[in-house]
Image (tube, rainbow, N blue to C red; front, side, top):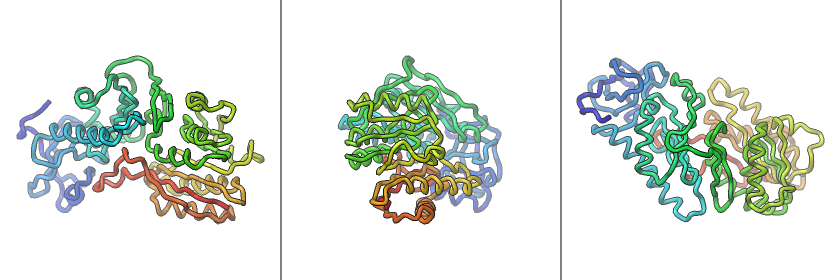
Length: 398
């Protein structure tokens, strides 16, 4: 796998096109390339400026708009540097999750940990892996070997899908890479018990980036009537009911996820009668007149409405409508709205502006109690801010 240093072919950039790499941003755009080598697609290239100055080593995919992904910044063996980035990511999580209260977390966060194209989630002793670039896809067996060396795990399951792979010219791929057995995995998060389903599920089975928000909901839910919109496997509903909520209504279009939600509530010793599930479109549910009950705590955690800049106008309207309808359901005497967006195209300021317009349309007085982002095991590389995608506002609505 390791090549002599002189064996890596050279990708040369146009004059002035090296500024992003000098700032250690991982993306190399096709328009920046002055001369490209003949190299196996997905292979590693040595990237130089137009005058021959070394910039980085990158994984190369000539058919993709982002044709290069920087993976090593020193002029040393790049594969050894990639391995060290993986080891550092694993070591950091080991320091954060040593108390045993949580065994489900993001282990490697792609560019956030300096490893473009590789996302790894830990579910107890099972790892769920996403390979999102051609370069990482070609290193599948090597990645498995490295993870088995540096992680205390028994099994590795691949869940590689989504738009990122499509842009790389790759088909979805799912299945066991190491070990086998049941794809339903029991896990623990802040001493709450969940079962997640690896096979056929969204992402890797549980939205780990919302861990801190689930803990916040648990702390605020006592005595409240909760509506959990886009609930998936009921993480927020479970946290709210364990925290003392009177009832929780979970709304999602995924019936299999709602079945897991009901199981997760019972698993934590909650009366199952306190949870009602609705296999329904979120917008359709919020337009019901009347809704099944009144709510004084609503959680909105929809999927990304804007995955591309072309989606922005429709996404702004969708987020505005969703938030307006939720605000209108809360009592005029005051209620809590936790509203979230995982669309990178919607930045923090734009999201707050959207919520402002929703409040105006709903004719409600709204105060921001707190602002939040993704959980700390989803770090943001300061040189690659695109991985800072999740933003949440905790609101008091009157």
